[in-house]
Image 1: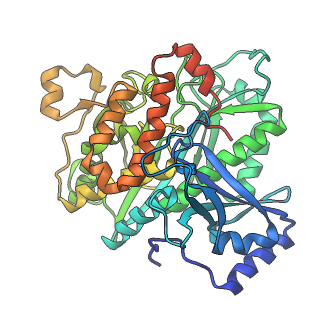
Image 2 (image 1 turned 90 degrees about the vertical axis):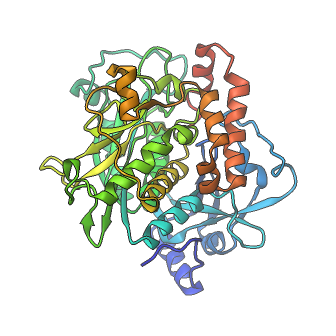
Length: 457
C-alpha cells in the first residue's frame, strides 16, 4: 500500500474501535507526541475517550511550537509569531499502549483548516517516503542511539569503574536494562542490541528495520520509554551530542537499505561490493549533499564538538566499506549482516529531529537516483590520513567544522530549500541560530552543562 502524502482520517468506526481497544487495555490518557525543530520531544495528552478527536481534528498548539528552542526560548521568524494556531493530529494507526494507563501516538501538524502544515516534521518524512515509492523503491530504515545514563540528582556523584563495551557497567545497571528491554518489548520496538558503549556512562540501543516513517516512530517512542524507565530507577538520560566536556559524544546513526522489485540495490550488482548503478546513485546523492545538510543532521551548537576527525562520528563526506570515519559507512551483505547490505549515516546525533534527518537523507538519495549520479570513489582509510592531493582526487571534503559554518551552508542550500520548503527550513535555521546566539561564544563548560538534558524526555 502506497504511503499517503498526508495523514489520512480514519473512518469513525475504525477510530472508535482503536479507542475501545485502548480503553479495554486500561489506557486512560493518550499522548499525541511530536519531535520539534530543536529535536525536543513534546506533546499533549487527552483522555482515552477523546482519542478519536485527537486523531480527526487534533488539539491546538501555538504556531510557535515550530520555533521552540532546546532551552525553551522561542525563535520568532517573519512568518511565525504570536498570532496563529496549529493542530496536532495523532496517527491512531500507530498508537501504542505503553502500560501504566498511557498510550503513545505520533502526531502530525495541521492548519486550523485541516491542511497539512508546511512546518510538519513527520509530514516531511512521510512525503519523502511517498516520493521513494513513486520511483518504485522500497526503503527500509533502522535507528540506533547512544545515550548517557546519569544520577537524577545533579549533586550525586558518578562513581564506579567503567570499561568500554564492558559487562561490568551492564551489571551495575542490570535492573534498569531489564526493565527497559521489557518496555521496548511491550511496545514491539524490535530491540536488536542494548549494551554499554565506548564512552563513560554511555549505552546504546539498536532497533529492527521498518519503513522510514515507522522506523523513526520507533525511535521517537524509544526516547519516551528510555526517559520513563530511567525515572523509575532514580536515573536521568542525556541525549546530548556532547554530555561532558572531556569524553566522547552521543550519536544517533541511521541505517537505510533500498530495494527494487525485491532486489537489493546495494548488493545485487557488479559494482564495488555488489553495489548496483542505482545503488551507487543513491549513495552519491547522499555524499554530495551531506556538507550542506549537516545543519539538519548534526544541528546543535554542541554537535560540532562531536563531529571531529578521529571520533568515529563520520566527519567527512565520503563512503567506504565498514569505514567508521566516513560519514556513509557501507555495511555489506555478509553472514554477519542478516538484514542485508545497508548504509549507515554516522554524522547524525540525538539533537537532530529524527524525522527531518531521515527525510533529508532520503531526499538527497533520491536526487542522486533521479540524476543518475555515479558512485564516488571509495575511501578505504581514515579520511584524515589522506593527503590534500588524495582527498581532492577522491572528492573527500570535511563536513562543516563549526556550528555557524553548518548553519550558513544549510541556509544557502538550494537542495535543503527544495526538500523542506522555505517555511520549514526557516523555522529549523531560526531555532539553531538561537542556540548559536545564546551559546556560541560561551565557555564550553557552560554550554555543555546547560544543554546536557535539553533533548531528554
